[in-house]
Image 1: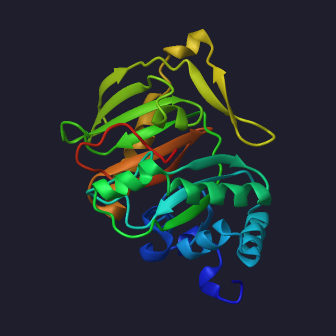
Image 2 (image 1 turned 90 degrees about the vertical axis):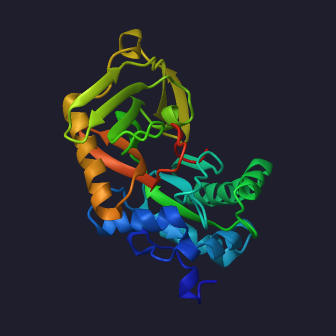
Length: 283
């Protein structure tokens, strides 16, 4: 394994081959090269993920060493090959593991992501959309953002097609939104930045990072349950993020974002599919 440079982990910015690293990794790599605010990390090609999954010790050692160089809490996300196109989105089909803090934890998360691509529901989804062949799953390992607020942003209305931004947001990690743990705040913003709608949700739980790894679900104080979690400045920053994604990629986008201490991060982006709804990362 380690003698072949193709099977070594690569900097996320260097993930360029979608047939090896998957669409998510390649899109995030392009975003980093374009100067978009993407948390740093590294990417694993599908052949390296396969090797880790079947217990190859050289593959495991290569991934563990690369994580040790990063040395911080990370998220481990799938990057399926041949998925998340303008026609199909595999959102919700594959696992994401948050707040991983050890080399052993990263290896275990990679195995779990590999397994999630082979569940009955994931295989049925592939069949439904005509994705042929054995599942091939790349993996993205990124620095974990510990957000004050997070959520999803559609650069065009996903249901009506209106030329406006649609944003759903909640306190803490965005998985509370994409996993439907809360009724998020809902915002519509025009291309000029004018707020068209600001509807408070019921954000009664938030996901909290644990020092020992993993996350916990906490109750939100009553005074914050229906309080708007995004300020006008936050909405302006998200509008600028949408504009920058359109400039880099073209087309319409389904974006996951997080805001930590006033800084907006792009966590992932996929093409906006027809009939999209508020669902985000793989769970």
